[in-house]
Amino acid sequence: MNSLSNSKRNFLNKKTRSNLFVITALLIPVIHFIIFWVLVNFNSILMAFQRFDTATGKEYFTWANFADIPVVFNKYGKVLEGLKNTTLTWVFQLFFLQPWGFLLTFFIYKKIPLSGVWRTYLFIPALLPAVAMTSIFSYIILPNAPVGQFLSSVTGNAPPMLLTDPKYANTTVISYVFLTNFGGQFVLFSGAMGRIPKELAESAQLDGANLRTELFRIVIPLCWPTISMIILLNIAGFFAVSGPVLLLTQGEAGTYTMAYYFFAQTKNNALYQPAAIGIMFTVILFPIVVLARWALGKGYADVEF
Image (cartoon, rainbow, N blue to C red):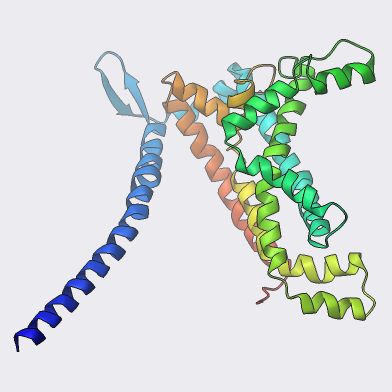
């Protein structure tokens, strides 16, 4: 009788320990979500409707932050510059980086010559920390470094200052975005293509399909969920381009972006106006994301494989 009671107690203890482990594992992401998403965003919404009264030392409710948005756009050229550069980088990512990344991943997937070398070259930037990647990139574009010397030999002029000259700074930042983001997209596209049954491609080849037919009739439809996910992430992340600017130029030489504007204003304790501008852009962007999600869902029917 005692042995039966002990075994039952041991079973309950094991079950209790298992439940505690599951609950703890679930609590970690829930707490992270509440602190870093719910509370932070809730406070941002509150700040959009508040201002600080220096006389009383208290915050008060107001619509002035929204009413002053046109004034901010007219008064601070950095906002318009940030909007222009953000749009430029976003268009580059959506209409050049992603299609080119998918196409190159397809050719590596088909095992073109030196595909292993290309795979390593594309994947290394995704493995390196951002600070290390920035240091390497900043070094190789110095005037006396390989890139500067090459441009000097091509143009016949002095090596350009690629990060401080407004004529080249934006192009340099976009090149950095291309180099660092390519690896992540390559991993996602490679995973999607790796799940395509080989029998489909072999059957298509037996029927006389060439690479173009295989790409548009098999690979793109089966990879469409991944493609549409990356497109949606690029659209939703329209105002999130700040890392390259923060690490490379600190917004100088005409490289300001909207995300860097929010960062700079927050750093200077100017919290209320950027919060209102952020909400305005969110209201504009949300229906665009919903419409894009609906349109992408019409692209190809969902395929189970």
